[in-house]
Image 1 (cartoon, helix red, strand yellow):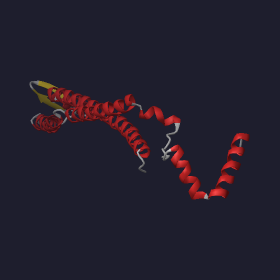
Image 2 (cartoon, rainbow, N blue to C red):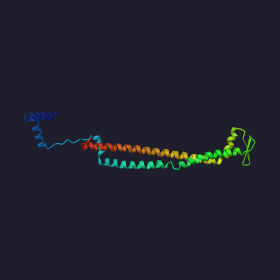
Image 3 (cartoon, rainbow, N blue to C red):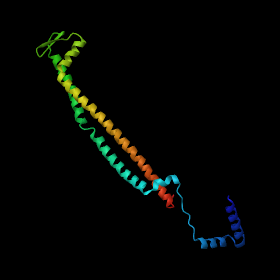
Image 4 (cartoon, one colour):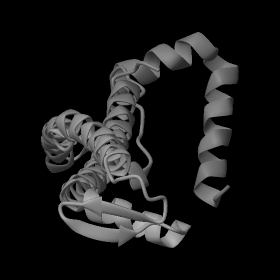
Length: 193
């Protein structure tokens, strides 16, 4: 303690010994007024409770809710017509199998050659059979490739939308935590827990 504090303490101890603790306290309150104890906020938290910071938190909470809703709608719409495309894909796969089977069954009696649309195709090994099947179902296979490409594009868009939604949720969580901290600091200053 400093020298002044020591002298003040000695004086107070002498007054307390002479008049008693209660008398000294009553006289001090009469002279100084009733002292109230106020809670002090650590300096590093004071910037969080400025009016601008509180207003910014409220604005950011509103904006983050809007972001979550918008990205959630984008996430839902990213699936687009995926159900229709999947149905078309399955229909095309079945159509390809049926077209190929019909062409093979109607190809003629010779096991080494198949005639289809007036053209004779070799049919004596796996490679030539696969080539014939692909030729027969060329248009359906082309459409199947387009549908699969559209499905892949929808999947990519849905992954992007899901990532954007998760980022929006994480950002909102951080803002919510800051808002809770500000609320607890204000409750502390108000005398609550």
